Length: 374
Ligand SMILES: [Zn+2]
Image (cartoon, rainbow, N blue to C red; front, side, top):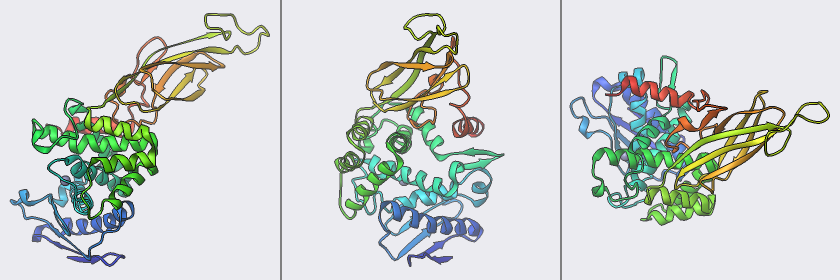
């Protein structure tokens, strides 16, 4: 099976007779991926791309990458019914054309520059192609590939260093969860906090400047520092090399009518009382990532404030027409690396799990992982 991209790249797929539909999907995904990844990380410089779909029974030959040649795997049927496995494998191996093919890093010493950035790029292109259903759409539930990577990243936690050499990982599962899952989750977190354009642009700059060279971690850190600033670069360095982690939590709230620091009477004019008070928020862990905090008034009004999170605890001032009744940290869930999302929201008087914190992809991921997991 063959196709030629608009850019003139000849794609061919070699496949066993019973995998014709998978092969068609792989070619279509590759056509999309070459354009998308080329725009992000520098144009694919070769004239050909060969995809090999191994026959049933030779699955171990699948999921590999070489310059201009990738091997895939999986059945189209499984991919169609339960997820985008065939596409995910294809796009993952295709992304390796950049990381570590064109950007020839030492994959043994720094697997996070190889598999980690490849997993990030894989998620980027899957989301561009399928939106929030980037991993699967099952029974109306959308499953985001980043929710899957996040699950692995949080499960592995911060017990081992992402940026260590491949043989130094104690377990293969740690290697997978940290190098693939945690690195992809980390870069996506930086996108959420510092802006997708800036972080994606920085990785793109690293990929373009490092093409046909052998850059190390310092090149990636320098690109992020230059494009997104010291805070982003420092968070990346800490998270990769020093087991950096973060968990935001609401510690409480208070508000009083009258505008003083303590309880007071309503406004002297008898009109709408002004309530003043505070939200108490905490940041556990070593990563300093600024976040939004939503302050909910009893009347339904929501005020969004920015917390720079430089200190491990803060008292955020509140002033509104009604009592402060709920506080939600990072309401748009930009910090995917946050280890515990259940303490990001609290209601006056009790710690509750705000539905809006655990909606969408996270919830779908949890349900699906429970259903499909071992
Ligand atoms: Zn890989």
